[in-house]
Structures are given as C-alpha cells and as structure tokens.
Amino acid sequence: MDSIVEMANLLKERNNPSMQGIGIGKVIAASPLKIAFNSFVLEKDRLVIAKHLLAIYGTSDASITTHGSHAHTVSDKLKSGEKVIVIPSTDNMTYYVIDKVGDL
Image (cartoon, rainbow, N blue to C red; front, side):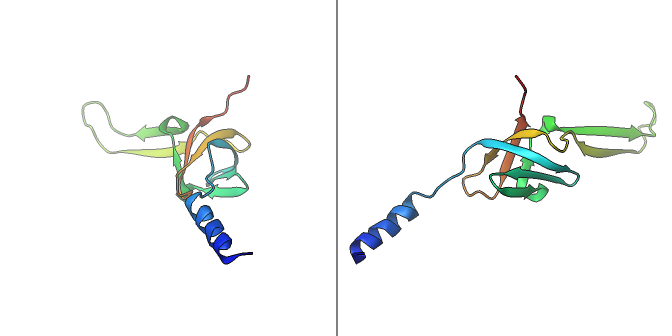
C-alpha cells in the first residue's frame, strides 16, 4: 500500500472514532449492580443511574417533636434479568441508565 494512502487511512480512523449509541442493556446482577451492554459488563462504578430507578427506604427512631437520629438505606429497584435503556458517554467511560424497557 502506498505510504500516502496508508497515512490518509490512519488520519481517517483517528478523525472518525466509532461511538456506541443509545442501546438496551440487561441487568445481570442487582447487588452489586452489573449490566451487560454491547458485549461489556458494566459495574456500578461506571454507571450513573436515574434517581427514579433507586428506592430509598428509611427507618427512624425519631418522633415529630424530638427530631432524633435516623438511618436510611438505599436499595436498587432494578432486578436481575430486566432490560434497561443505556446511553454511553462520548468517551465510553460512563454509562447512563435512564429507565427500564417497557413491554408493549
């Protein structure tokens, strides 16, 4: 191959990186959260989860008048086997889980 053509092909690849688009992922584990997406397994540290997909359950030993201490635990609403809508960031390092896939 001519060196000029080879260099042009290298420049073309550099200027047109292949990007993942919005897609469907599958929850493969709920705790800790793992989602399969485009042949990758995404773990919680690479995911940004929409707030409505998280449930906050609170317990409190406080009364209305004392405003004492209280504790909260966070539990994912996502269950193993569910499909979710995933949007990758432009650098493919962070993945946004925006909702569950609905059934028609």
